Amino acid sequence: MLLFLISILLLAVSLLALFPAPTYHLWMLAVAVTEFPLIFLLASVIIAVISRWLPNYRVATLICCLAAFIVFASPVVRAWMQSRPLVTQLDKYFPDTRTREKPFSILRMLPGQGEGALPFKTYEYTQNASGALTLDHYPSQLPGIRPCVVIIHGGSWQSGDSRQLPELNSWLAARGYHAFAINYRKAPGFKSPAAVEDALDAVAWIRRRAAALHADTNNLVLLGRSAGAQIA
Image 1 (cartoon, rainbow, N blue to C red):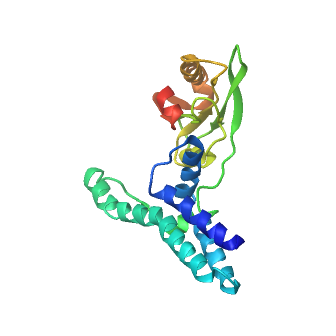
Image 2 (tube, rainbow, N blue to C red):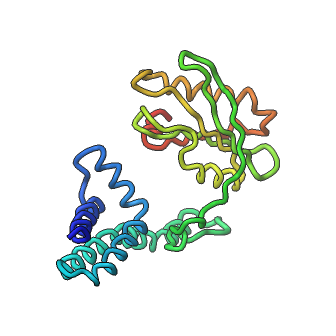
């Protein structure tokens, strides 16, 4: 009976891959369902295999697991379908690109397949009512004066920090960019435009330290995720 209930729960959760989440916490679960589908696919397979020895609800459990597996797999299938024409389209508009990775690969979804973590240094870039604010600098792995990317994390303006998704920072640094992941003041303790002011302070700090960091601040981009995009 317990496995049958778990299979129903898996099927219900899988629907978040198809339909908009009605609440914030279900939206957070939907992010996990679509970003980490292999975990849920594996759970569906395990429950289906174990259900073979169930005295009751065996067929119903298998059906629920099969349906959940199909729905959990839908983000992967959609990503693959969307990626197919991308190479041709990118080659059309960026013909001078010398190397190009596949836009989508199932193998790259497995742990350990992404960019290796690179070292970073944490600096205090300003002092204000919240105390010290810091940023993490991932230095360019290519020599010379290199362009900069300032990463502003997400979190609905009230959570998150500079250590979110560090793989992107390492990826940028490995390709010759100085990546600066910043912290900023958050709600509800601080209201707008506090976060924007902090981002400006971070950019000003980078400009002051440009020579020491070998950073080309004339080529500087703000990269914001979610709430960070609004701040950027």
